[in-house]
Length: 420
Image (cartoon, rainbow, N blue to C red):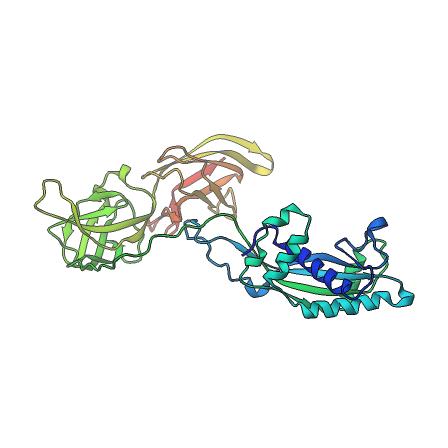
């Protein structure tokens, strides 16, 4: 792994290698690291220009840095980025004397003789550099050596590169790639202590919950007045309790295969709409303050809320027969401050509408738990609507008209909201 000056270190090392290769063959040849469109005194009459024109991720190492974080966000190891550096080498000289072509041959031979940036080459290049920032480079300590290879460019790719260099005539050039540079992050990971000893515990007669359902049937929703049927194995203990969330309750009936708990006998303030967890807990019998002895697995079930009343306030007329206003629901159980509460409206076909209206509104933010969520509604058509509420995906139930003599027999008929 290398620090943030590794890219500049590669360029400085390549510049050093080229300088050594071309001067060894005589002649005052200058090696620069300028953009090819540089004008004025920066352009040598006889020289080689090394220009880093592109940096890309190394595809071979793209997936090597997976899972640097634990699921909760703790850093396991430092981040690193594997990079490829793309260089354009251009040549300056008297074309009539073929100087650019001679330099290109020297450069090709020099880079062929030095395909790997060894720690010795990097150290010598940094020793000759006048840039103080490069003094803290640690590229020579990188485990994977940087390799320099020719990079083939098509005529189309070459034309695109030179077209970005405004008002610059084309010169003889070579493309090389330096792979790869591993840049390492600065945040330190956390290494846990090693496992000192392995221990196994056998819990006899541990209760196991296999499923939770309503006494109304397997596929029936669980409501605030339902009786939970908790079925499984070894559910009966000396003292058996049912834990819902963080609250513990005494069940009505307990056997080895089934525990029943009536939600209707629980204070509504202790119930929460949405996804709930249930667990069987066996307490010790001979302690003044019972301590939990054995706990079952945790199983989730969905507790559906019910709408007790619907209120509308501040109705304001809008154009095209629509209304804005505030709708307040009274539920039979509490909803939390972070739970997602939605109001679902479906128009009932009739004199006031064709039944095509359907709306979803999100509840206003709450600072405390409440049974009365508030919804601000906009552009609702005048009409009669069936009302549902959804808390974390748990939807309230609609009532069905069971009167055979009613015109809405066997249809949903409550709860209703009239927008006038």
